[in-house]
Amino acid sequence: MAGQQRYLRYIVFALVCLVLLLFISSSSSVPTAHWPTSKPKTEDVKASQPSAAAQDALKPATPPTTPNPHSSLSPATASGDRMNATFVTLARNEDLWEIIKSIRSVEDRFNRNYNYDWVFLNDKEFSDEFKRTTTAIVSGKTKYGLIPKEHWSFPDFIDQDRAAKVREEMKEAQIIYGDSISYRHMCRYESGFFFRHKLLLDYEWYWRVEPSVSFHCDISYDPFKFMADKKKTYSFTISLHEYEATIPTLWSTVKNFTKTHPQYVSEDNSMAWISDDNGETYNNCHFWSNFEIGNLNWLRSKPYLDFFEALDQAGGFFYERWGDAPVHSIAAALFLKKDQIHFFNDIAYTHVPFTHCPTGEQFRLDHKCTCQSEDNFDWKGYSCTDKYYEVMDMERPVGYEREQD
Ligand SMILES: Nc1nc2c(ncn2[C@@H]2O[C@H](COP(=O)(O)OP(=O)(O)O)[C@@H](O)[C@H]2O)c(=O)[nH]1
Ligand SMILES: *[C@@H]1O[C@H](CO)[C@@H](O)[C@H](O)[C@H]1NC(C)=O
Ligand SMILES: *[C@@H]1O[C@H](CO)[C@@H](O)[C@H](O)[C@H]1NC(C)=O
Ligand SMILES: [Mg+2]
Image: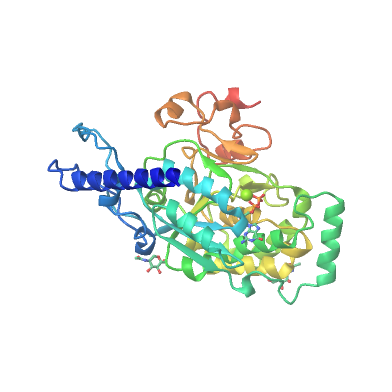
């Protein structure tokens, strides 16, 4: 009994202290410094944060620190106009904690200064946990879209038995994702549908982000604005050779398409980057599409849509395992002019197992990079970036030879 009373006395004492503290801090005559804050986003989420007064009450009752008047402090947000642009992520609910890492990396290196929106797409409803966790960490507005069934299912012209047989064979051959149905829907969706989702119709530019990726250097300008100013349409950071077994008939299908639609093939195209024999065969070079900054209106244009439609009709998304990377890349290489494609050398990026880390130490120091030269994939044999430099007639950076092996 006596113990209980002592307990009670402690609690009462603690309460009195807390009330006193609250009183002292709220009646304090010392003005609090007001720092610029970034603009609020979705109100309903932010409203749940504790009020400023309540937060003050939790602080120790020590004198306030002196504000730093140093004029070179960076502003909380970058000045200037925002582009009509958004990040876009296709993900499952179980990808939450891997996409959170990717978002944190994008925010730290770029978006905390720009506050671009982020659109999330899923073939199932996003969970409340997914929504509240991602909304808490994205500095711009977040939007969540359900993919319509028609965009994530077998078209009725697909022969199910044939498709099932292929999955069985590819499993035997140990081709990565070879027996997966969902991976095929994903590749087809990224090839032909994401840019037509209702939520993306509101935007002109997109930046694709996948779970488990990271960015290694500060991006201190707006890549969307760069794309618009320089009249770019599609961009990449990593390029490589596709696994031939996943696309045996892709190139013949492409050739059949360009034969019937020669008007879509651009004059100053990048055929030399994707074919070593002037279009006879595909050399399997492609931009790695898990990173892309691109123009949505191009993907929504008739040439691209006709191209996707022709590929879809050929059935290769299900009878083989065509990836969205070669599909986007071949379209960009053939239907765009060379100078509409951009290599973002300054965007250092990893999607396992490959990293693009800009060549040249001074650049890496200036941009506070956390990647090292030996991780850079650009000049390795399996990359297609060296060939890209050759075809685009670009000068390779100083010291690239040291990163070749
Ligand atoms: N909603 C949804 N997203 C998927 C599915 N499969 C893959 N994704 C997403 O599609 C992208 C590519 O998938 P990932 O597993 O990273 O493939 P990888 O990079 O080729 O190994 C990622 O953004 C995934 O989150 C799926 O079945 N449903
Ligand atoms: C953004 O781009 C989309 C697609 O081009 C367009 O429909 C929309 O009106 C644009 N929004 C603004 C604010 O310009
Ligand atoms: C070749 O193109 C024509 C016209 O677009 C189409 O009807 C036909 O199915 C295509 N053939 C193949 C093998 O893709
Ligand atoms: Mg991935």
